[in-house]
Amino acid sequence: MHFNVSTCYGMQIVLYLARKEKVVSSTELSDRLSISQRYVIQIAGKLRDGNIVTTHVGMSGGYSLCKKASSISVYDIVVLLEGSTYIPDCIKQCNDGILHAALSKSKNYLDAFFKMLTFDQLAEISTTGRLSEVVEVAETHIGIM
Image 1 (cartoon, rainbow, N blue to C red):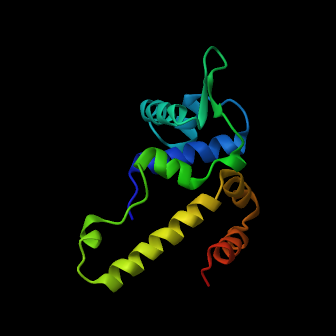
Image 2: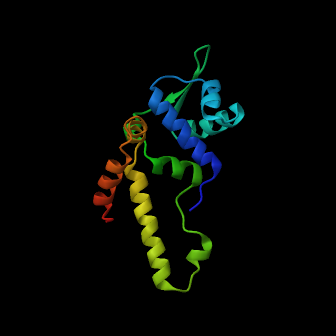
Image 3: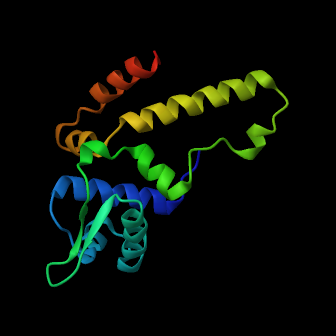
């Protein structure tokens, strides 16, 4: 699976806003995330259209999350900016049913993990370093051992 750079940047923007829990200017986002301000504005517009962020105008303007970080999953951002998770066309057209079934199953696991992984968890992981705990819960929940 391959994400467009805008999807990675979108996730970085949402994570930064989840950590800050306040209105953040496009300049700050650009500086802190090393993304051009023009690109931040473009991606934030898509996130706004997808009801992920709210735009604030004026001297103290910028962006904030329009809902709790706990209700925004990685899957939400991927679907918004990519359209969906997908299996490459070459795999879809594979004549080997076993291979296709295995790859389809892996896509289902990935979707389930992305749906479970929320931005409040990611914000906490970045301060506590407890990624392994989140992965363990996900593995148990979606049946991967």
